[in-house]
Length: 192
Image (cartoon, rainbow, N blue to C red):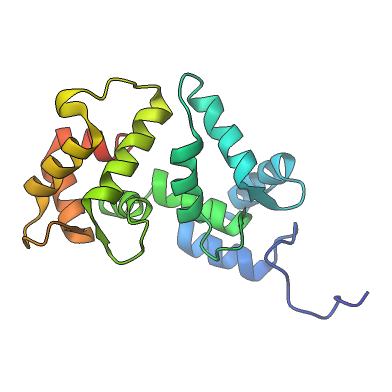
């Protein structure tokens, strides 16, 4: 009808050859695998968009004892690359690939991007404490006494990893710190 000759909308439920080529180049998946992922995505999101409410529901299945809302807000905002309030299939598959198949540096980079809620390229103590609290909530961990206090833990981590002395972590400091300290990596990027 009116849109037949127009450019494909990002919310479309059909994959173009151009999209498939882009996803093949950026994910390592074959066309068959991309089409299988797409079919599964459409079963869960028939309109081709994953909204934040559905995103939280999916996380709650994996973490039934925890509260997923805070953590999911950060993750959702990281994966919603075009900031339209939903995750389309391209964003979904690229996020899935980055968090599950990427190199350790790439996966830690995604974790950094999620923590950097201000988008300034640095993580400060407040951002880190908020994310640590969200991770505790996600797994149902209510023990926040002593050295498990998110603010204290954030300050200790920044103190240990901050090479520049500005009380903030750059992506390079974050990645290097997580790679070099398994305890910190377990706290900041447990699934990496």
